[in-house]
Length: 199
Length: 227
Image 1: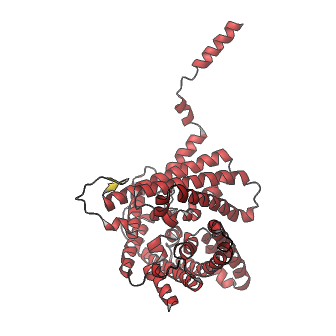
Image 2 (image 1 turned 90 degrees about the vertical axis):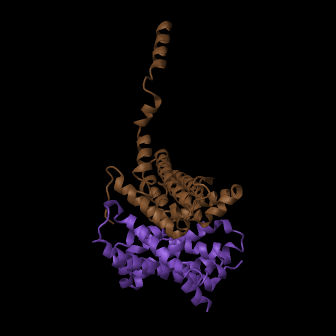
Image 3 (image 1 turned 30 degrees about the vertical axis):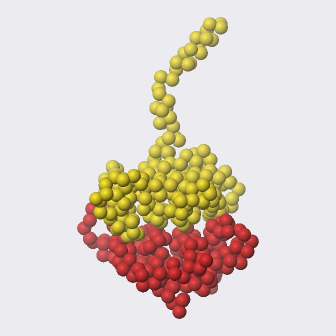
């Protein structure tokens, strides 16, 4: 039950993009085309689902028992870079179709703050347990993918809309994300992920 | 002979007729700095590094502090990376750069928590997020890994100044409309109806979107790329 609530909460009420601004740079950069937006969305779901549990294990079985919490940031980012590399190599070897679809997005993901930020939120800010962290990783990825697909669909239509030249591209995209965030604010109070925070 | 030497010394002493800042203005260092502050402005020109921009700018002082913290991290990591660039194999350079950046961010976080606990609490998780700030790694990859330490340091300071300036401007706009204050000093008086919109995440997106649009529309000679 917890798992379902956390996934829905991570998608709607605590969407990592719309409430915490995580993963905004690739969002603005990639949302111009529907096909690349869906590729990036899938890659983010995949990598988040893998890295958040791994970082949880690292944090709770290595860093905390040995009193090394101050190394959290370095450990998380190295784990993420390493995991992305492993995922890329194994995907190339075992599933070339998937690699062709997601391959070009994987290197970009190392510096995607959505990946690093989700580990940070789950472990440092809210201190979720293992299952909850995994659910948050998956749900966060789905929420991000949902937002970028919606945005890509809107931007396809913006191409023919009249607007000042300076606003085209990044400016109007940011304003539309703002309106989307205000819309999603309507879900606030339905589920609150902060309630799951442990000590 | 002696008199002649003295004469030469006098003329040398009087020589700098051009003011020192005029001379400095034409050095490559200064040109690099100015071009970094405006032309390579991470937020308004390149639209990078958005998540710390939005998360830490509900107040002007938070934006300013986040900017200074980022400037410190960028400058120190560019300097370090420029020194180690010849020893790091090309295949693992990104991971190596990330570790250097993460080390400096950890340093900043510990210093903030020790000496400025209220500020550390206000910025919260957005200080650790400097690690994934695209332009810190971007500067390391595009500039520091190809140039000497001094120029890399100046380049990072220039970009950091541009970033601090942008963050402070965004913070001022949000604080004035959202709280009626600027740097926590009352500006619009007690009758001002606070715009809650500016404080919530939606307002952050809209403010930065308008800034980016205005800068691109009115900056002279700025190329507007279609994205």
